[in-house]
Figure 1 (spheres, rainbow, N blue to C red):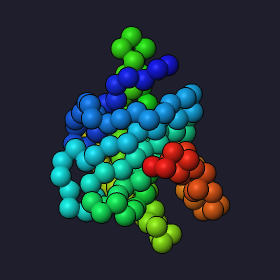
Figure 2: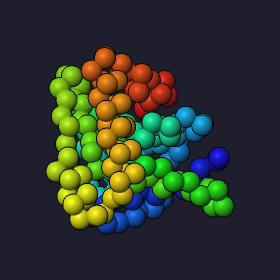
Figure 3: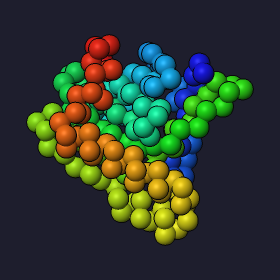
Figure 4: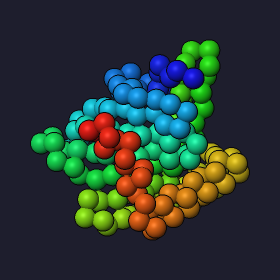
Length: 159
């Protein structure tokens, strides 16, 4: 499928945003690569690039400061829904995230939001299961020292 339009859907808070300014750099059956500016001005970072791993339920983003220096890698656990009729991809953030810093430190974050979403019936059992499996896969990749595999698509394009 040729993706022309991207949407980011969040569960907490509930919203769906058209990522109209994101630039699709490359796409194939395995991944979609974008570059972007922040939606709302941030002091910590201003722009970045993302690789959506369509079979793995993972989005890996490189976040850059205003001066162009790398701040961190932000890994979202996500669910993808494509619409063949209009060529859109809706990416639902399943809340669990992993932050990897350039010095190798790592944090798993927002599991409290995931628990809240489950308690409030904001996510389905299938979404919860998918989230945990994708999170486990991502952590296994990182723990085995293979995180560079996920970054290689962005690095290859100089993003």
